Length: 318
Image (spheres, helix red, strand yellow):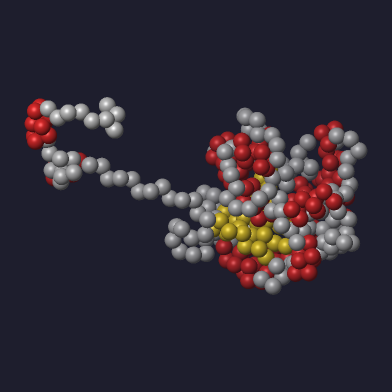
């Protein structure tokens, strides 16, 4: 019967109503004891904020990061740089590993880092929180560097246009960014204190690692001539950390996970917790989440994970 329709009362209806307790009345004690306790509300995902680092707050943020390293033993990194100015003459898939590395070497030697995204996380994928309680915000970092001058230095115009569209202010980074000469020694100190002790995670990480090594050694550093030489330098500089390239991990998964970071994340049903693509802090966090999802789904023990460590796009991967 429709809720809006009515039916005439009958004696049987009335007697039934008289014998049945009103549902609005108090329940018997025995019935109340049988009522299940409602489940607690599902906790909302913690809010994530990007801590943007400039010259004026670099020392304070660097000390904060140093204090977190004993508890957060994984580090996901992402770099933003002025594109590539040395490019292959033909399709990229036709390049030999030697030629891929040669192009990387030339570009990193010619260009400067603009941003570095850093996400610290523990073995369960949890991020640092600086407040008490489960509702406190979690944090990732985005370092802005001063070396690149868009008016004087070589760059790929399409890359600069894309970064501008994502909010990068090139005048501000050049005037107020962190100096590589200050950042390099701090990065070495973090590594000695345990940065990435359980693993350093990237996505398509050849350029990320190369720029990390360049900024670590400071102005005037030139990339080694061969990939094998660079691997030796990187292993020594990173204190033999385990390196995980999520793009290379995706190639070894039993399902089709080809594509860029955003594409792979979508295939794994992951979304961004903060920011947009090609913002270094946001990309480092999405790299962390993608690594954790792949680890849970496909590399769920240490032996499996160890087999994918050390492969980096454009350096060790063919």
